[in-house]
Amino acid sequence: MPGREDLASASGPSAPDTSSPAVHAHDPAFLHTIAQAHLPTGTFTMGDSSGDRNRADGEVPRHLIAISALDIDATTVTNADFARFVEATGHRTEAEAFGYSAVFHLAIAADDADVMGPASGTPWWAGVQGADWRHPGGRRSSIDGLEDHPVVHVSWNDAQAYCAWAGRRLPTEAEWEYASRGGLEGAKYPWGDEEPDTGGDAERGGWRANIWQGDFPRANTCEDGFLTTAPVRAFAPNGYGLFQSVGNVWEWCEDFFHPATYRRPGITPAVDGAVHDPTGPEEGQARILRGGSYLCHISYCNRYRNSARSQNTPDSSMGNAGFRTVALTAPADAAPDDTAPGKATA
Image 1 (tube, helix red, strand yellow):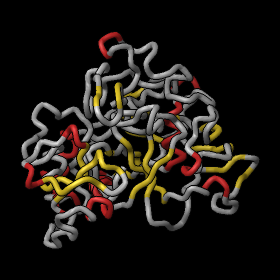
Image 2 (tube, helix red, strand yellow; image 1 turned 90 degrees about the vertical axis):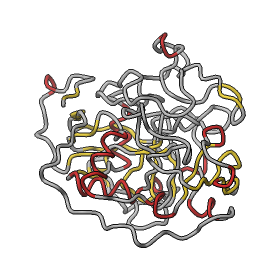
Image 3 (cartoon, helix red, strand yellow; image 1 turned 120 degrees about the horizontal axis):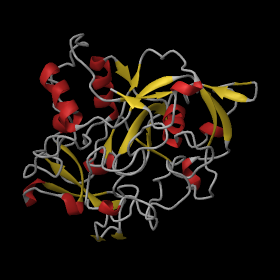
Image 4 (spheres, rainbow, N blue to C red; image 1 turned 180 degrees about the vertical axis):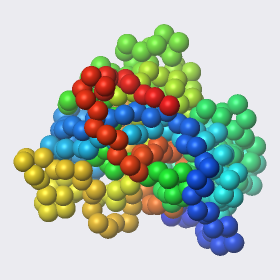
């Protein structure tokens, strides 16, 4: 996916408007309304077990991880959720400050004058002036009727601003993978090892996730019913109650990205054979993205898997990336009978 610099190489604005308002402090009256999936303390093997890894992404070696109990959003943050945040704080996203964001070429809804040109290295993306979370395709688009779709065109920095206000945080990469696996050790997908086009809801063409169908990047047959984003609960949840952790939109995580994170001893020392609550490298240029998106296809980007990793700069925004959050306070570690697969409460 294109970063801010890839889009800035096309003709158009390259610097943000520094007059954007500061993010307000956390409003204690705000109620984070997204249902929570309650994850018990547990261990899992992190990394690619299917052999479908992308070598440059650093999905191996597989290693044992211990994760403390946590409460994580059952869905990604929606347009409605983000709108409440913006209304309360006046936050201006980086897409709005820079004046442009990345839009997939078939989703552009803008005048020709607003299209800056193709992104460097990924010509199916274009920088579009006026594209932002309220106008995902450009100035001629809106989020009317998309209130329950994931918010997009939000950078890692925007996600941090939301978290600061809501009294939440982004998940670490390890927490995200633990949650996405839904209690299935070594599974390729949140539902198991079956491919996404088998066993799904008939209403979605039998698909289990919102990914690309057809000839990427030219024609999407939309067998699952969606060209771009889908409602956050459009597909069945995994065993922990998370909806669409793969497909639909990429999800920002807290960690810095490095392709050798899993190979670098000493970053998160192992105890009793497991690395406990790792937080990734201490520094870097890019932040982790997980889960793939509606643009992923086996012929090009097969990152709609539990172990798949990607990255982008923290000021980058695009029409296929959003986020979900984690509670700051760890829940009391529930007994096994209280952590039945799929349990999620408001």
